[in-house]
Length: 507
Image 1 (spheres, rainbow, N blue to C red):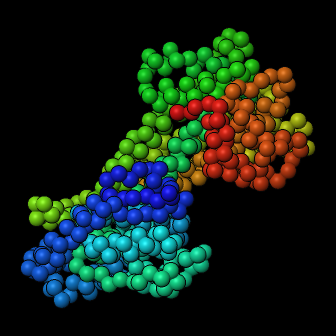
Image 2 (tube, one colour; image 1 turned 90 degrees about the vertical axis):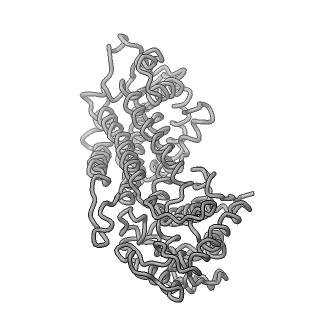
Image 3 (cartoon, rainbow, N blue to C red; image 1 turned 90 degrees about the horizontal axis):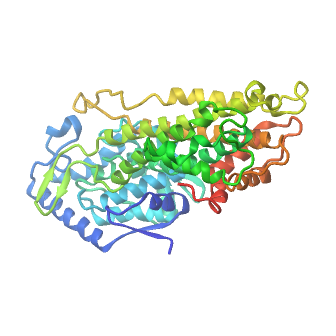
């Protein structure tokens, strides 16, 4: 069944992808239902007792010392949402919005937020029926959580804001009516429970991480093709070399390269044509491996965050405590997403240098710019320009967002994470890197076509077939961006990786 059950503790990265991209339905486990109801009972009791608890019977942020009466609880929560809906910029992509809705629901399902079960089920019904709120991409400081963008999500639950339903943008009230979902009125604690968390940055980062893991595999495939196009030396990938410097990612990359190049007659041994290759070929295990290890670290942090309670205050029913803390602070993810962006940027950086080695006749021994009739035809000359422009842009984007902070809420919130900016930058870096690697695939295949009588490796031969099915050899100049777009589609839809993995297991 295409259905995911959430309990706040067992969601996986693959589950996020299934819901965000493959439209799996989502429901609560019975245990989650019980936990949500128990936490809500404690909130209701504290409201009845008019106990002073942040966000339940007080204002928010700098207004935490302002007491709110029981009769004003509904207005307080509604005002929170409409006043915090200050997002700007383009709407987030639908898959990211679906990821946000899933992650927020999963956090609420842990039973530490005090939301009513009916309110949580409204969010899940919207997700399952495809009512996707318009959430602007900018406006979050990453602490206290993703307040502004998450408020736009909640607006639609109230019959406000805007949403996409069945491909059409419309007012939130119309979307809810069209999907036959009753709008809600928030009560005590609920507005804060819905918006005080890190789910926007985490949704963007989680989907980027998933794609980055595939891009790592594609990077090894592209590098292997370039090694063949350069008649590269495979001795540098020998397991003994990497056993004595046992970084896991380095070892995995070296094994991938040897497996991809198995049976290749393009490759050479040291001393046959040259003693050693340039760093961009010889050091591929060290370079790709470092990014592989970094991405592994990011995955470990995301696995924690997608199953975390990140709002404030947190409800602990067994102890009958409500504690105001700082789990909404995005710093753990901000650092991770900056690291993710840097790791992906390096994959593009080394790829562009391999492209240069392919198109530069002084380095490749092949016709200049991989065209047989240079001068009349420019071949891959400007394709390398484009790759260079993208990696240069990535160098700007890779500057960490997490080293910045700016005080807000009259200095009550005096250190913020900028984690959502870090995640969005990593996503942009990924798209740039995908295009750079798409150009390398094209260039490597073109270079290989200048040779005759050689055999490609076990894995690289499958990659070459997929490339050539989509993009023919460049015999004379043609509109190049169309080829780049086709190649980029092979990268982002993972077609090359999937074809290769049918014959070679890539780690």
